[in-house]
Amino acid sequence: MAILITGASAGFGAAMCRTLVRAGYQVIGAARRLEKLEQLKLELGEAFHPLQMDVADPAAIDEALKHIPEHFSEIDGLINNAGLALGLDGADKADFADWQTMIQTNIIGLTYLTRQILPQMVARQSGYIINLGSIAGTYPYPGGNVYGATKAYVRQFSLNLRADLAGTGVRVSNIEPGLCGDTEFSNVRFKGDDERAAQLYENVQPVRPQDIADTVLWLYQRPAHMNVNSIEIMPTAQSFGALPVSRQ
Ligand code: 8X3
Image (cartoon, rainbow, N blue to C red):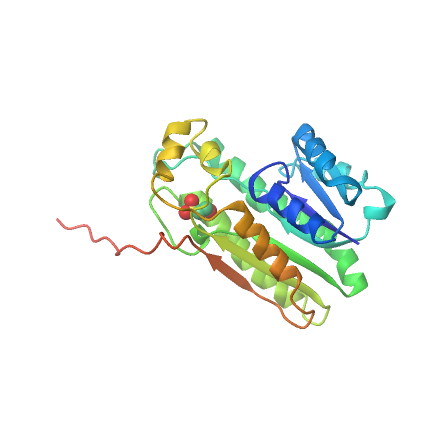
């Protein structure tokens, strides 16, 4: 039995691979950057299988799934961690190509991979899908437009999977993190403007990849009769703002 983790080359995904392998699980780490996965393989050994996969491309998913070795081929865990935010411009200024990329990865890729893996879980009457949503899927914020909407999709897709999977023993959880540090998330969002990305984390303790990996391990270790539908995690330093009112 193996757990397939997407976006495994860095940040949350790499921390999940390390944490789950060290806890005794067999892990397939999927990502585009094979060289990063090969480094993880050197570190984690036989219990880890690196799988080159571009989650944004259904044909690439099909191709990658064909290359999973026999002893990793029974996938009873899927962690849909790959995803990205691009830009923080208002909806009238945002780059439509960025919107398409987010939809392709965060929605189409996640949905397609889930559809491909689910039948074997249902056939075995056991399995666990963990999706990486976001607080942006619940709370709107300026510039969150399509990114937040993709994560709202992930949230509702997770709940609807629960409805479809009733009676199968297959569990689904949606993890919804807030401000997280030590990942490439903000560097990607701001397209290499690392100074702008660094400003977000000035004088604040964000949630760390290890916090999310520990949460995943905790979820995996819950007994089979218990399903955590969603889990929202913010840094203690992050909270809520008042709803703005525009006056004339
Ligand atoms: C990451 C959290 O606040 O940048 O999904 O949208 S946030």
